[in-house]
Every structure is written in structure tokens, then in C-alpha cells.
Length: 311
Image (cartoon, rainbow, N blue to C red; front, side, top):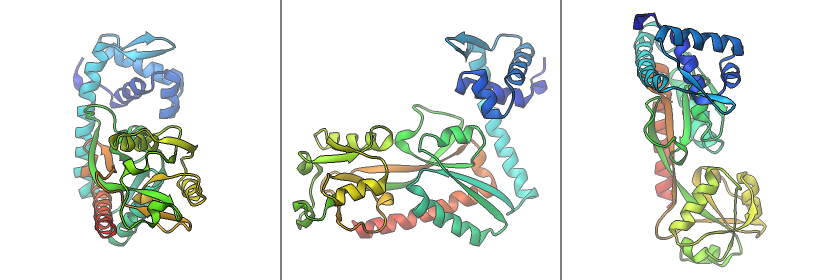
């Protein structure tokens, strides 16, 4: 069996199944029938000459041989992305499409301005925005549904992952949202987070924002008392305005004034969340994706300048 005889479609099926764990989930993700998925994997195992899957509960998992094959598959697919990028520079120029997946608070102030820049510089390039949770963009990239994902560094997969290239776009500062009549809202001195340890806090029951809030307060030496559970920023700020509690709010989420609230920059150790851009390994060299990443970086740089002025 020659390596050059391997079908890349079968390797992609194996990659998807290793991530999703079942034939049915793989079939749904790749718009195939379960029997077609099984046939592709059975054929690949025959070509390789060794079993690639073994049972695990109700699902399956890759064998040791399959993990070796997948490690090389990631390298091959990344190199093919680079080859396609070079060819696209000749064949498509400034035309084509780019799809951006991003979490909600990154869209108004980061994604939309960047895509406006892109529309002016490359009018032949179409764009599509896909709102998704910070962790979900990795699944969308793996499935080929988006070209660029905006996520948070805290949501990145643990350890090195050669399937993706990641770069930081923006360090988004966290401000404290206080009711307008709160004593620290009226004070000329900025509060430290530790000064607010006895207050009731508003944050989600799960997800990245709960983790970020708990981590920031832990660094300040306390566990926040959760007065209310909410994850929508509009709802959180409205509750703060009503005097129902305090909240840590990322600068991207707090654009515009909410009557009844005051945003204060915490004194001392400043908490941040780190916004990153993620692409499939090698695909950042596509002219259209490279142009979109450049626009995102310029928009992030402008937001950094605003951050300095606010602080």
C-alpha cells in the first residue's frame, strides 16, 4: 500500500470520529450517512493494514495506530492548507469569502468594524458572521464551517494542538459595575476588588465568565457571594442599576452608558480576559483569511488605544 493512495476524505472522517466519539455524531457533522462513515473507516483500516478503532462504552476511540496516523494527518492537512493558500493567491486574488465565528461581545466592537474595513479594501470579498460561544469556535473550525474563530485564551484546548494556529488580538480589561448610589461609585479613590469582598455579585452559573469572575476574585483573596445568576450582559447591567449587586464587566461588553450604573477601573492588580484569533493550521496564509486577520488586528489596536484613554 502506497501512502499516496490514501484518500484524504477518509482521513478527515477518522479525524472527526476521534473528536466526536460516535459514528452517528460523525455522520451528522459531515453530512454523511452512518453507513457511509463506517464504510470509509473500514476501507481506511484495510488500506493501512491494522484496526483503527476500538469500542469504548457506547462509542469508539482511536487505537494507538490510529493516533499515529492522526498525528501525521494533522501535519498533512496543515500543509495542504498552505498549498491552497499559495494557489489562491494566483487563482482568486481578492475575491472569495471569509467566515468569522465570534462570541457575542466581540461582534459589535471588534468583528463589525474589522469587516467594514475589509469591505472597503476588498469589495470583492464577501463575509459571514457566525455567533458562537468562545469554546464552540474550535468545533466550527474543525468542521470547516468558519475560517476564523474569536475565542478567549481561557477557553483554548489544554496543551499544544497542531490543528490550530492561535494569536492574541486583545487584552480586554475588566471593570467593576456598581450601582450609581454605591459609596465606591461616588468615591474619588478607585476600589480594589478586595474592598468589595462583602458585596453580592452577579455572574453566570457556568461558562467562561463564571470562571473569569471567580479567578479574578480569588486572585484578590476572596470568593464572591453570588447574589444573582445571569449571563446576558444587558440583564446583568440592569440588575446592577437596580442595586441588586455588583459585577465584573469586560470593556467590550460595557460599550455605551447604562443609566444607574457606574463603571470603575479596579485599583491594584487589574483583571483581564485575553481575546484570541484561531484558524486551522496553515490556513492563515490564505490571502482572504490573512486580510481578515489584518483587519481584526487593526481594530484591536484601535480598541487598545481607547483602553489607555479610559484607564
